[in-house]
Length: 569
Image 1 (cartoon, rainbow, N blue to C red):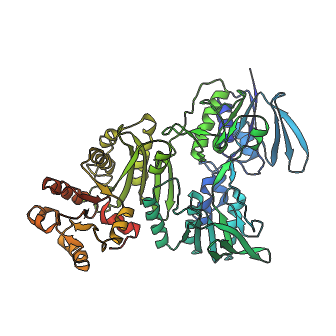
Image 2 (image 1 turned 90 degrees about the vertical axis):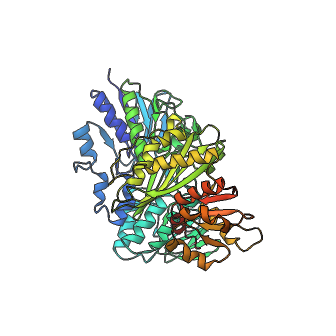
Image 3 (image 1 turned 180 degrees about the horizontal axis):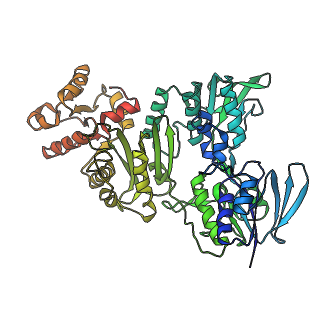
C-alpha cells in the first residue's frame, strides 16, 4: 500500500522525516511544504556565518558532500516534492486536506493520508516601540543572517545592541565583537546571562570572560523601545537610559509555532503541540516534532520546550520510521546544550539547582575546578564543573561546565553525564564513571570522578563548602563584628602576599604546616579555607576537624574560580 504524506515545514524536522520515510517506503509520495524559499538549512550556524567562520551562506544549506538542498536536490536525490514559498493556512482534519496559499496569492489544497507538522518556532514577541525601524533584526532565518552580515561587511555598524542574554544573544554578540570589532552591548532583563540554564556563578564566569573580549553587559535592565532617525534605529531605550546603536539584534528567545495546530483542534500546551512517545498528536494521523512540540524532561518528568536542531533531526527519524509502519519512540530529553563564547564554552544538561527546587527536588550542588588532563602534561587547561544532586536519594539531577573550548574536553564531560541522566544515576555512578584515560586527554582521577567524589563528601557531611558568590558576601563583611576569618592553605609564595594585604583577617598557613601551627587559627570565629582549586583547603578542613575545629567552610573551586568570577581579595 502506498501513501501520500504531507510535511508542513522543511527546515529540520520536516526534511529529515520525509527523507527517512522515503528511504523506507520509496513507492509512496512525500511532499514538503514551507512558507520560506529556503529549507533544510543549519539555522544554528547563523552566528558563525555572521562572524565569518562560515564564509558562504550557501554552506548552511549544503550537504557534507557540497550539494545544495534545494528543489532540484530533493527531487533528483530524494524523490521528494518540495513546495517552497507556500504557506499552509488551514488543516481540514475531517477531510484530510491542507489548504495553502502561494507567494503570488493563489490558493489551493492538497490531500494527505498522513500529515507531519514541523512548523518550528518563532521569535518571542515583545511589545516594543521601534521594531519596524531599519537595522532591527532577529537572527532566526537566512534572510536575517544575510541582512546582518551585509551591514557589518559594508562597515555600517559601529555600535550594536543585542537584546537577550541567552544562546542566540551571546553567540551573536561574540560574532559581532570578535570578527568585526563592533562595540557590542548585551541587554538582559534577568540579573544573569543564560537565565534558567546555568547557575549564577557559572553565568558570572562566562560574562567576565566575554567582558574581557570587549562585550558589554547591562543586566537587570528592561528594554522599553527603540528610537531612530530617517527610519533607521539609532538608540535602544531601557528603563535606565538609552544605548546608542546602529544595529539591534533581537535575541530574546523563541516560542513554539503552534497556531496552525491549535486552529485545527489539536491538543496544544504552552510548551507546544502535545505528542505521545511515537510523536503522534491528538490526531493519530498527524505527527509533529521539532521546535513546535512539547517534550518531556526526562529528569523532572515535566513538560518542557527544547528548541534544538539536533533534537528535531532525531525526532524526524522517529517520525519517518513510524510513517512507514515502524514503532520508534522518542521518550523525551535531558536538555543538553553548549554555547561557544570566544575561546571558552558554557555547557550543561539536566537541571540547575534553582530549576530542580522548582520541580520539587531537595537539591544541592557542588563545584570542582581541575585541569582537563594530567597536571604534568604541557598543554593542560583549567576546567570548571558543577553537579546538581538530590539529598537523600543521591540522584544526579544535572551538570554544568565552563572552560576552554578549543579541545572539546569540557563538552565531552558534559556529554558523558548527559548520556546517562535519563537512567537516574547517583553520585556513586559519577564517582566510578569509566572514562578513557591518557595524560594528553585526562587525569588518572578524571575531573568527573573528582566531581562525584566531592558530591559524595558533601552529602556525607565531610565537606562543607561555599561558592564564589557566598565567599564574596563573606569577604565584604570581613570587618564586621563576628565576621569570618580567612585561612589560605597555599604555598607561602602564593598566600603570603594576600595575608600581608589583610593582616588580622587573612592568614597564610600552608596545608602541610597546619597541624603544628594550629594555635595561629582563631577558635572563636568561622574559618573560610582557600587554596588554588579547593583540594588543599578540603584537606585542611579535615585536619581542622580532627583537631577539634568544626566551624569551617572551604571555597569551592578555589582562587582560580574567584579570579574567573571577578572577585577581588
